[in-house]
Length: 278
Image 1: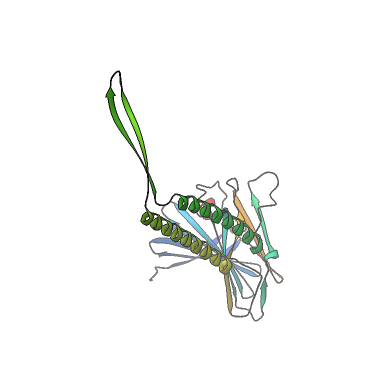
Image 2: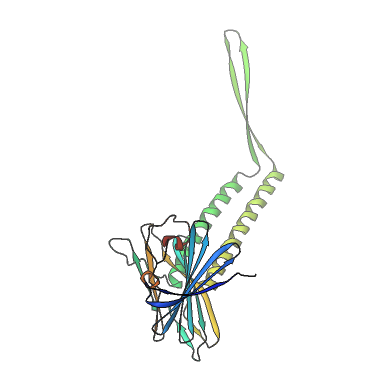
């Protein structure tokens, strides 16, 4: 896709560094890229504008290792902040991505915030299995009740009667059983169960393949995936620090010169939590 690019070199006092500014349009949306040096790191903030909202992507490069983050809200067996991560290793050495080296701090909540952390794959996998097992039980129970009454129809008729000193309505209840209808309903229930099980398996496959786990990234290779942080509507922003080898990649909000604001919608991208940048 062709992009119209406007390249500007401007100093931003808020960063204290010279910033390279790229502005262009992609798929009808305005994209603003800001890149600057901070000590040994190169930082890039990408803002994608859509009508009156903005999404943000964050990138940090140090010694040939680039990490990118994108944060947004999802419902996936619970409510979470989903953090898409890309790790590009263009260095000459292999590096290790380790789950225990992800540090998360949330702002806006009073009291204990220990549960608002980067969930490890094993932790989230257990949550998913419990939820899927519960859903499967309810689905099977519902199908069993439906099978028990399959092929049976009920009808009611009212008949008016009158006679010597008496009159009124008589109610007649009729139960009819159809083997053919029973077979059709049972087969449909089984198809519903099969489709449900297939959907559950597909979701588990997606999680197994996409959720980040401990991984060694060799030179000229890339790791992509995601991890989840429990969601709370009172959270104003999330600070994330990834440590890889002896390098610290700090994605804390204050590092990006972005103003903090209350979320406009809990269902929208986390970029909307951060309305404007300096």
